[in-house]
Length: 173
Image 1 (tube, rainbow, N blue to C red):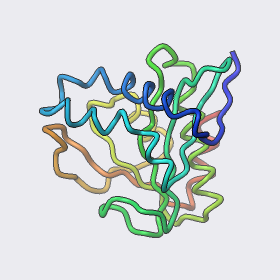
Image 2 (image 1 turned 30 degrees about the horizontal axis):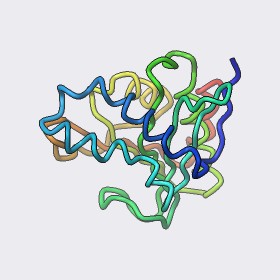
Image 3 (image 1 turned 45 degrees about the horizontal axis):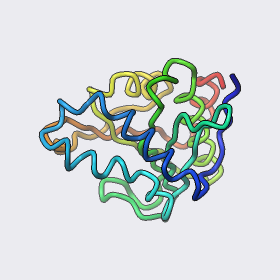
Image 4 (image 1 turned 60 degrees about the horizontal axis):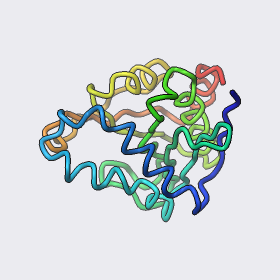
């Protein structure tokens, strides 16, 4: 089935939040405070207020989403203001392994390229093994340990802007 990547629309709100919660549900036992953590996860659509929320759709169903925070947009203190940031890559568990995540990451990297960001940053955890493998395979490098989030280890990963085109090509989308 064909997968389309497009910008978020307000009527996507419930679908984005549903997919985000479903995508993170496998980690419920890993977080010390799953109730608190998941309360933020299920409000993923709110990120569209200050960033580019991209969605993956197939046959009218929302199957994934990701956020691109462009240079100059509000972001966490761990990221310099001029960088692009990838946040909250989520794929409906029933759609994993079909290239949805790759397509969403490629779309985010294209946003970063269009914004001429000098660096693309993201943070992730070893428990998110599939996402981490994807990021490392396309050239992201771990550059900084972050404080644990509700008992889960995290680190920041970076990709120089000069390597974004190569990373997009490596995604084979």
